[in-house]
Image (cartoon, rainbow, N blue to C red):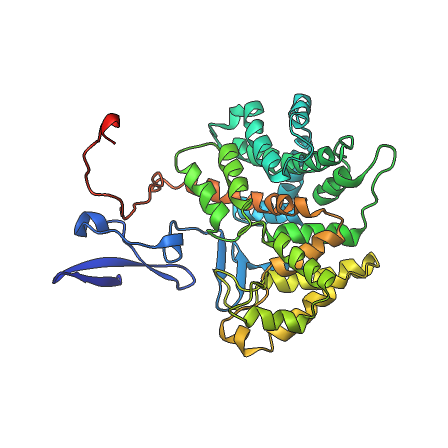
Length: 428
């Protein structure tokens, strides 16, 4: 028998259906609430509002669980392959050998940008924020691939997805080279996805960047851990834009803009800035913990706590292990990692943080990882966007195929003036 919730307003009772997800999550269906009661719900930030049904990503914030299409994210830690995970998210299953080969070949075939697009990069000042360039250039791609505005079959969708996923790394690398005044390095079809990106970033004419297997694995893992994360700010943005039947290029460009915010994709930059200030100021980790607990202190401990996770972020655990491997492989003695480790150790032994369920999140160690890979700070969020793109595409497709979805149109509670008379200018 279907479950219902009873809502009583002014003595009148309403029965509202309860929806149950495959993992036992429950939601009250309020799609007819306004029609039946004349009321709407009020939920700033949508923290208690389910905007869709999705089969892509599952998160249990209380237990620290993250799964892609049912597969725990920890399963990808050994032999990480971003292309496989991208395929999994978008098409719903891990590719077999032939499917993986076909998709990889599509990525290789689409790695080049139209030559005329290079002139667009020249129009940006060298100081332009890379995220601004990324959003603009993804939108620009739509001018060159407008045949994908209407996706007639699965093959057309796969081709569009491959073009976006392949070209975003070329756009990202070119924007970095532009900021340094360096010549663009073309993709190498013999290299795999992440190795190719690092090649375009760091190779020089007649001197190809050597990509160690451990570094390629680290890049793959970093992108995988950011590939999707349920209905976060940027993913919700992609879905909202798609709800107007906007094409995937436009929707993902909007996602980039949402990710650009310092409370979303820019958080790992803030963690690194905090660790740098601690190091340069000679502040001890013990002093940091003390200041973080002091209500009168302006110090804020970045990289702890999460909107969803009330346990240790599973992505943070994986990145922490990979950071150690990368630093060891590259023989880097980064003082920031020691500061970060000590802060974590102190926080996880302190009742103040334990009681408030403040644990390290993915941003706490990802900045150190990116720095060890040679990625400059202003490119951190671009890397995040590269990783998140398959998730955006998967979410776009899922909604695009859902005939029950309507254009997003939230309601509001108006708190402005009541009706007023217009006063002519000479009487004001």
